[in-house]
Length: 187
Image (cartoon, rainbow, N blue to C red; front, side):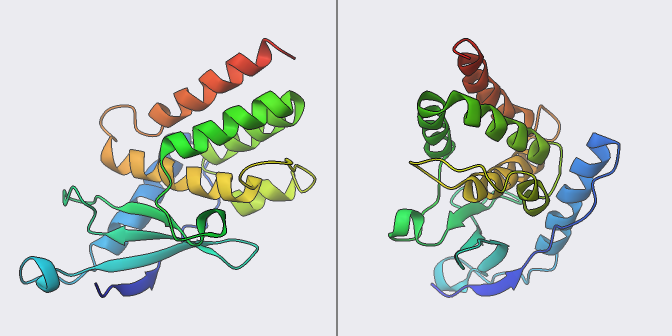
């Protein structure tokens, strides 16, 4: 399938009002989707888009594909190039949560710092800015801190678009908090 390739730039300074910042991010992404050309049918006649949204330090990219399999409104899929040095993959929430559980078990103190970094991303801080304060945070196994922060940023945005009238990004944050609370019992 052929995709028109575009970039979405979501870098901005978060406002003091958390809800306003979440809404600004939502608007940036939705406004970009609103510029898409309509398709003329199914299959090859559908319009398809690939949005480069993050670049990793090692040169790989995180991108969105549209339309997604649900084909509903502003639905999109989040993909990572060369996941675990293999083929491109659409990471699931469980992929990230399982990696976090492993990190918590191996190094609870470093995991506490990672949780703090993830909360900053939840609060609409850019992962690249957050990473400046956690340059020494590394784990022997699993996904890089950079990859985790950049993927969860898009999990949060996706949930804010899809579930704005409900709890939005808070759904995934609750899963992060459950892992952290398990961690605090052991520190």
